[in-house]
Image (tube, rainbow, N blue to C red; front, side, top):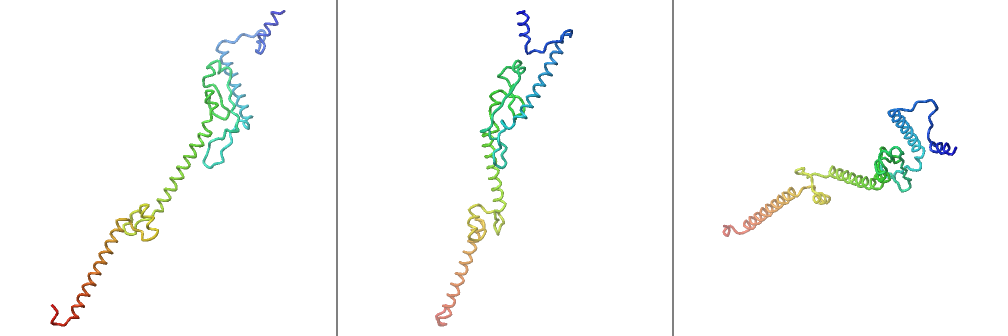
Length: 206
């Protein structure tokens, strides 16, 4: 009697074979185990879908950011005994709720799409904003009114208070004005000398 009870205890939790049925062949046992495992995985997915409110990270309230805020989220990982028996707990046999595929336990508990991704996306967004602002600035950069070359930053700043000339054209314009002034001064001096000469008596003219 006691032996029979112990045998029944060893069979507890197992689906007992009906009397008169043939035992399954090894291939059939493997196929059945695979079907049972797939059914267990579907149950795992059902639990994942039903508990999303507890493990889902909240989105950060920034435009263009896809990183998740895990600070108030509960990390949930799951596996099956079949995977543990086949590969061990150190292998990629852990499923992190909310993520695709299987991971090691360390990777499953990590949050690479959290604060680190947020920092990367912020830097990327800042770089894109600077590039856009630089492109807009370059598109509005004025050109020299003489040679139509784009002004440098210093020339652009100077152009706010005067003519929009590049440095070479400004130097050329300055040289031209100085030459005109020198020519005008020479002409005025010559006219003044001629006037003084004409004002002297005819016998003192030479």
